[in-house]
Amino acid sequence: MDAMWGLEQAGWAVKIEEELHKHRAMWAINPTLPTMFKDYREQVLKAKQRHADYIYRHAYEKGKERKLVKGYDPDTME
Image (cartoon, rainbow, N blue to C red; front, side, top):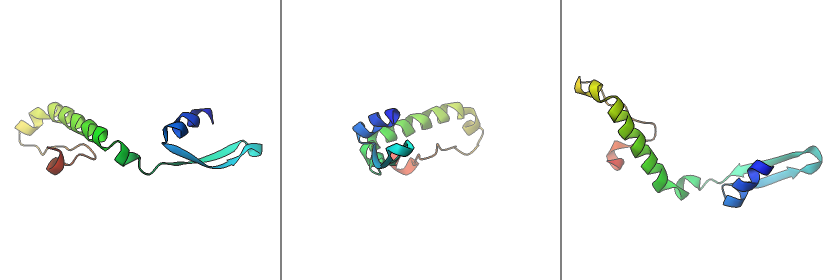
């Protein structure tokens, strides 16, 4: 309960059910989180892809196919 309090205050989760006599509660994750942090998520994906490109740079020089980070879209993020 204490750990979820901060998430609830930030608007990331909402308590939907609480049974204090059973020491049980249920939360739902805010479905708008991906849109709330879209710019930040895109920056992280770009940084991860730059890192992956750096790691595999020698493989690319030898003709290997570029490995893409999960969630990275080269058409919209480059």
